[in-house]
Image (cartoon, rainbow over all chains, first blue to last red; front, side, top):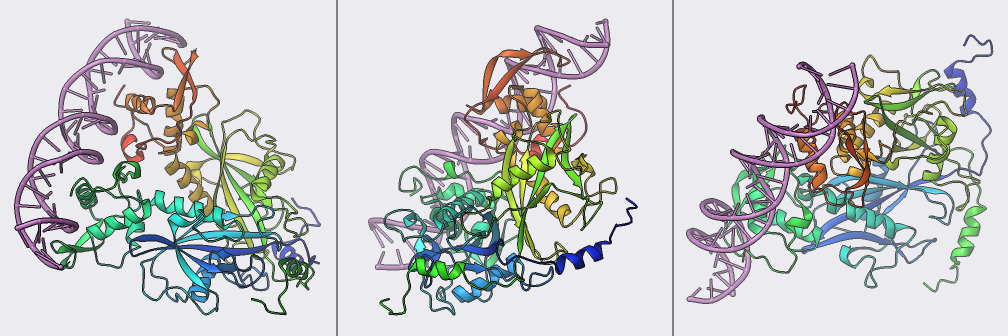
Length: 269
Length: 269
DNA sequence: TTAATAGTGTCTCTCAGACAATATGCG
DNA sequence: CGCATATTGTCTGAGAGACACTATTAA
């Protein structure tokens, strides 16, 4: 360890930074964002029609290359930062008002014809704010019902985005079982219990027990904090409005396969 | 769309591949592996002592740069492939006998002093096979008890590996609640129910109800398939040996905070 | 014999599922 | 009124938590 040829870490890094680098053999890194919302009760995903090669004319998740600056350790932007920037550029969403989390990274050979491109996918959930798609880019943006994706009804998808979307949908459907905060991120606060129930119905794609859902969601202490206001225009009695409390995890979780009714129609009606 | 300047995707890609590329401003991509096992009943993580700068002498997760070939789309290796290669090179594990899954990707500025380096972390679980650490590299490899990591007892960790390890530990502790297959991947098949219980005790760090665990794990249909053999040397009666069946998800899940006893000692004794 | 353990049985109490009932608002 | 809905209440059955018990093996 007392090697006379020993160099310090600072010396090593100086050598590393100024080394000869090939102009090939480097990969690129992108972020892709699966942005979900609920529009008119329909669980929907934002896609952008590509205006450039490759996959020109196909629909793709919003996203793009991560700015790595000049490659120095402290230069460029982080992954989360890239996501917020791309959201602003591609969808016009300056301040993202929902939930964002990393999904996973895709790096298979051949997933991008331009070269080796790693893509870190994110899942974003937000309420349906009436100033949606179509950002600074002239690119066409559109919300598609999740149920249509992957079917003949759905759009033609670029790259491996069909697989990413499938993973993202499953992440959302699974995680709202035990993360109540996720479901609430589809709504603007304050909201009513039936509104929250309709989030689950939209995401899971079927009716959810009405009275059981109400009792279950209210039984999680600290999850919903009542406000003094109510909301009319429900087609029934005024509904109390709640905001999110601190208790975020649902113990025990909602169970998708049990909360979902097999047949159409709430038995409660 | 009938632009006369329009080029085909093939033409575009040819231009893209042969473009001028800077020798700077590119990031690199690594994989890091949090390899867990249970040794003598202790939930443990494999770390490698770094023989080179940066962080020379510190302990780090096994891993390394992903081979991206010459940067062409089909050249190099995929992420999973890189993980298996690094496992072989750094730990001598040629055929990985456990469970492997992607954790998440870390890309913060400054996380690697050499430059912008994205790292996709993996979680690996395997039984304690008695031919462990110390691979082709002369590097020192060692299993550390997870409980010691992050304390003064634990090793000094390189890069942001302390944060990665914390995420990995929480992933394992959380996921074995509802993924029985994960817990079983710490064992060699066939195994007994008490052996499986000790996996939970090791990972969660406390005693688990003995009789309740037995009843619960047996009640999940298709999870454990009995063999005709038994195992002696248990300190008690011979225990039946089981192998994993098809039913992998535990519905409803084991609940860590309920299955774990608050105090030492199984009330069952 | 003693101690530790594998496996089973039993009681209780919580809670999810099922469904009824009541009150409210809209056309 | 008739209908859909919000919210509360009640009954029941499944199952988790708690704990006792038996059988078996090692020291």
